Image (cartoon, rainbow, N blue to C red; front, side, top):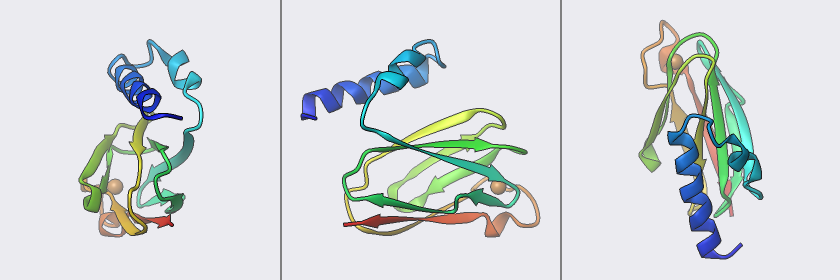
Length: 123
Ligand SMILES: [Cu+2]
């Protein structure tokens, strides 16, 4: 995919996010993006270890089951609130290999501090 097409897709995706599903056909029509579903529930993400390839565009689709958990990747300055029952999509393109922690940054109870996971970016 060339860059202009990729940029177009990025814009289309932003529009979809803003329109709350009104153009859901466009999401389904966006090819080549791997969608990884993650569930958040006191006090864990499932899965909690996600392996990506460098420069791979992926969409994390996060769904909280029981509480408005947070989702934060501090190294990449990315965060989102995960409203219960709503699939929240976070688009990523990791540009360097390594291991990056993600964590819940909305206090959710006694196990909150352990609610975390790891994104492993392979070269
Ligand atoms: Cu939490």
